[in-house]
Length: 251
Image 1: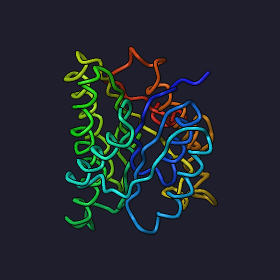
Image 2: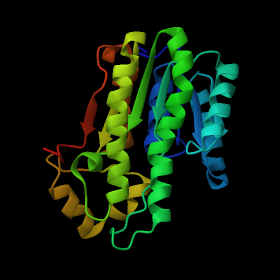
Image 3: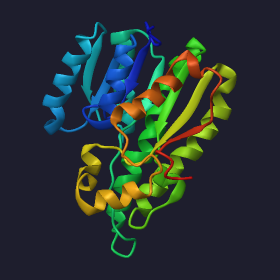
């Protein structure tokens, strides 16, 4: 059974990692996919993903667009509406980390994390709510983090940006619920992606896994399965929530 048949989904930052896994999961369930990548270095991966998505029998297109830039988001969403006609799901996944102790953190490092992680969610949500309001339906899924719930030494900027996403998500759920638009967040724990590759092997990885009741890092598909639930009619009475997909790390 395909849970997203005929839907159109936007996924930002989908050339790799969690975003790629979500795009593939959604396409396998029948959704047409418009996804973004930001740098020239990711173009080959984005092109390969676009081809993979099309091979699943859906319409898909990669767009080079910076979610941290408001004007770029406006152009991107307008282009998606012209190309796909509808917009049903928005996954705000674009994100970075610039880990550093606060004592050593520069204002520029702080601002970059806030722009990419938090302002991007405002930028994209601002653009997608008009077509969703017109359709009187929509699902917005924001990628937060368990670090936004727990905090972590050396990650104050990342934690603040991801905690901000949680507050934003809950507020938008209250604003848009009457229009049948749902807004939820996913708070992954440690996920096996390029961003966490430095933790994959050795004593560091074992130290973190010891704190996870399920005893392993998540796969991209683990997170994509949660996103599928929130995007589909299975989650049509769920809004304003944060689902911690962290293997029990925050218990």
